[in-house]
Image 1 (cartoon, rainbow, N blue to C red):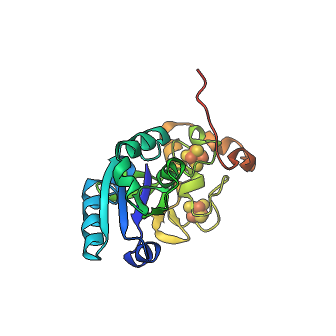
Image 2 (cartoon, protein in one colour):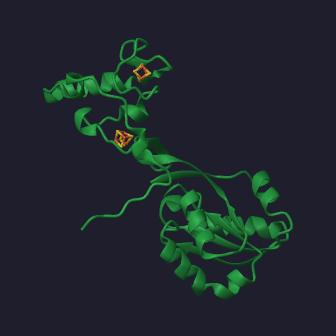
Image 3 (cartoon, rainbow, N blue to C red):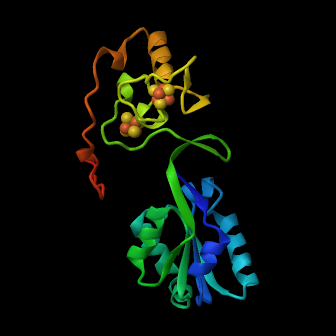
Length: 215
Ligand code: SF4
Ligand code: SF4
């Protein structure tokens, strides 16, 4: 899921200067799980805006704000409240904000900072595991991503800084390549250590990304 944090009130206030009528939008997927853009946070945002003397014309929490068609459908369901607003404040990741921008010509204000694609360790604790590099080598690295977990993103590790299995950038952290070696050893295979990994073809990671499922 996309891990996000709320922008500071100072930053939001600057974006909402002279915007007195605001429609609030949350996301029931990632932003809800991160506790930054679900029903509760939309309600808290509404209360805060009202203490500032602003009018909240309405609100909606979209199932997945990154789904452009659903975002458009939900905005149409609230078209009167949306029309009455002079800004749409979106508590969703950057993809969600852009869904709303694609569906409305109103001023759209993003209320979150999108941080990374993350796994949930436990409630409220997230870890980055994948950098979406476009050429996955997990099958050779025993399911541990060196591109993301290694502080240097090395494809042929470990570097000379590893000590007692710990990373030189932070001795509290396990070295990704040490973890890969140990996991492969348990599995009785050499995996990625059987070859020199060529530099990644970052050309595959062109922007903006496009993909269509093939039937
Ligand atoms: S190698 Fe790592 S960054 Fe690349 S797709 Fe696989 S998990 Fe993601
Ligand atoms: S010690 Fe290990 S995890 Fe840290 S930078 Fe070197 S190879 Fe990467």
